Amino acid sequence: MGRRENTEVRAPDLAVHCRGVTKDFGAGDSLTRALRGVDLDVPYGELLMLVGPSGCGKTTLVSIVAGTLEPTAGVVNVLGNDLAAMSNGRKVRFRRDNVGFVFQAYNLLPALTAAENAAVPLLIAGWNRKAAVEAAGDVLDSLGLGDRLTNLPSELSGGQQQRVAIARALVHEPRLLVCDEPTSALDAENGRITMELIQRIAVQPDRAVIVVTHDSRVYSFADRIASMEDGRIESVAAGPHVSQA
Amino acid sequence: MLWIAWKMLIGNRAKYLGIVFGVVFAALLIAQQSSIFCGLMLLTISQIRDTQGPDIWVMDKNVQYVDDIKPLADTELFRVKGVPGVEWAVRFYKGVVRARLEEGSYEQMILLGIDDDTLVGAPEGVFMGSVADLRKPDAVIIDKVGYQKIWPGEPLRLGRVFEMNDRRAVIVGITTASKTFQSFPIVYTRYSQALRYAPRERKVLSFVLAEAAAGLPAEEVCRRIEAQTGLQALTQRQFTRKTLHHYLAKTGIPINFGITVFLGFLVGTAIAGQTFYLFTVENIRQFGALKAMGTSNWTILCMVLSQALQVGIVGYGMGVGLAALFGAVTKGFGRLSFFMPWQVLALTAAAVLVIVLLASLLSIRKVLVVDPAIVFRG
Image (tube, rainbow over all chains, first blue to last red; front, side):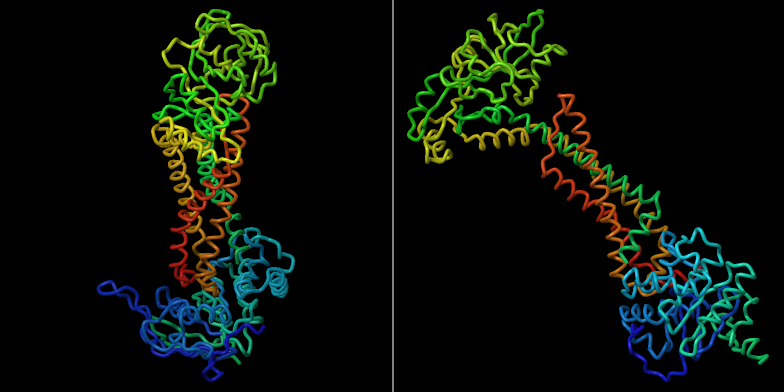
């Protein structure tokens, strides 16, 4: 869509490249070390799942990768951009142009219709309202919500709301999709449908998808699974469907 | 993005109405109280405004306002007439007298005595009878509101008789004179007749009304009169300002109204600010999500300010609208003074602007410091 900044400096095969990433919260006696030297690579075309118990640092790591949180130390290179070298303003534009988000609590705007919600990233990028809502309507249609475009979030089921959130995450064709517990608020069936949609539509050769989850029912959709424990990545393994192949 | 901000605002109906209520309350109170204040101030100068014709009012040098009568000797008229640049000058009596009505009750009245020969200073709004009838014996013209005050519910009728200082007065005309600050009925008569109605005093001349000669500014003629007679001479505009200044500086009226206006401002700010802040807190995750998705702080700031302005415009419109409605409804009662000049609208608009800006300050701080990573926390 011609909206991305041309700031790539790294080899094109890795969408995310982290080395020695640490993150501390607080200071002195109240200092908490959330990440303890994380190394992580995510190539384009891959769906990586970050799994582990609550408090192990998954959300902190994905927040840093998405550019919404500053690491205390380490190298974070996303889509060829060194995030540490970016100004705040540039990081905001980087997120706007390159990152799609799916949140655990959907975070849809309750006053906007499904199509308007899905159009938000385009509106942020400066599209006019009519064109943005039309484009969002097309994406929603591809996610099976073509008959729900004018419904408010309160008129949609949890699964439908999450599909709107996925449409919103994909409408501006980001090259990194970050999903935080996308199935935790859904029942098994809707969780499976959501992950199928993400796998079918979001995973593309020029895009990487990182899914934070501790919902073991959806592990089967991962290309690789990175297990975290106490602020470190303990292991990285191929996903079940990759292993079987 | 401003469109999203407005939909967010209106979408939360209860909070939206709460914020608007705060602004409406403040705008209503500020506009209504300011308009009543302006109405009262208008009353203080009503007799200057109603006395049409003369450019110049001449009075004792210590007079502070139009009701502050310090009588002059009759000979002062001739001294004023003798000042170069004075085209003409006439006597004018103003005093408060007690009238005895037909039915035996008493009523305080403002008595105005105008020049016997020229009738300069006569009221313009005579709608029953005529000014010329003042030349008849015992003739007076009374104002409509005063007539209705002393004879409530009775139809307006010429020829009614009452007494002032045991002397007969016959109503030969009814006029629409402006209400006065004292709210007494106003009675116009000839100067010589007024002296018969008024209590006997050594000096009785209240004012000399004069006109500047053609081509001479009234201010210049005033200076000449003051220099030559030692009296105070003011143009109609200057006398109006002097009277207003007296009421503003020497009475508690501005302070009393000012306190009410200030309270309206404070309460409106508190209600609007608190509700707006609660609205922002309630939507903080949405703002966080927008920031995570790449909305800049500048855009977020514009969104919050546009929400505040939208509330301000709606609240202002409703507030001044209700104040104007109040004025229109109470106008019929006759007793309440209500005057809403454009300055009141401008003052209220400025106050509302300050209210919504103050109300949005906490919210702006909240959304600007919110960490976009908040959206990843459960």
